[in-house]
Image (tube, rainbow, N blue to C red; front, side, top):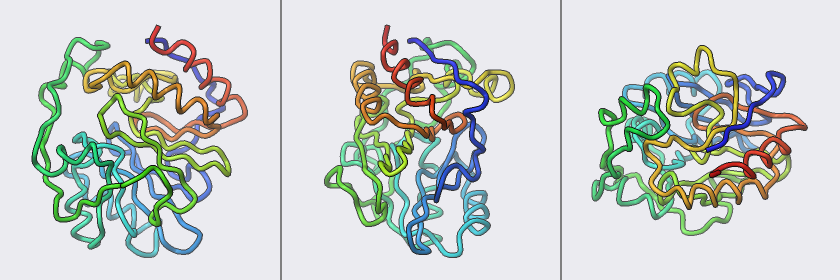
Amino acid sequence: MADTEISQHAILPIDHVSEGIEGLRIAFVNVCGIRHSDRRWTLIDAGVPYSATLIRNWAEKHFSEPPVAIVLTHGHFDHVSAAREVADHWDVPIYAHPLEAPYLTGEKEYPPPNTGAGGGMMSLLSPLYPRGPVNLSSRLRLLDSEEDIEVLPGWQIIHPPGHTPGHISFFRESDRTLIAGDAFCTTKPESFFDAAVAQPPELHGPPAYFTSNWNDAIRSIRRLSILRPRTLVPGHGRPLSGSKIEQKFASFDATFGQ
């Protein structure tokens, strides 16, 4: 899979990412808080195991009240592990795509990882990662369409599968901001730990060791490219923004999968 290098000038801080968006990096994964026009906000994803206290403390610092909901990009362990604890603490629902439901209701676990995909420490360690199933049934609400929902006003909910069957991303057309989840990364996903120190920011595909359908993943990059995003907020890696990001992402789309 081809990767696309990014200028250092395009890198955004992880905290105040864009208008109305606060970010938190926990180890190698990001969570986001999206402010609404009023004082309400929505949490996107819920981090790795044992991160509930970190998420609550961060939320108290940046927001004056609990979120109206948690929305999951997908059900992998590094995006959902604190979901139940923080949802119970705040007494809020958890939303996800219907195709993720079996992995979030205790019915199924994800396929085993491909340890040979992409190389790197994360790939080698991937058999040790939790694959579920987790059971969020009492809090889980399923998104019944890709239209805006009241917990994400002003945002389009997009279904770019491949990394998982029910993976979703979020797009704000007013400023062309894309919250990607794991549809792609801005750091080499198979080497997160090394990349955090030494790797320059680049556009990469989704984490290969846990991506279930590469044909869908390639088509999903094309679908996201058509949106012409100018600010990218990934699940892994640093946010990117600027006038050249649209062109960079189009180039990434053109070479991804070759």
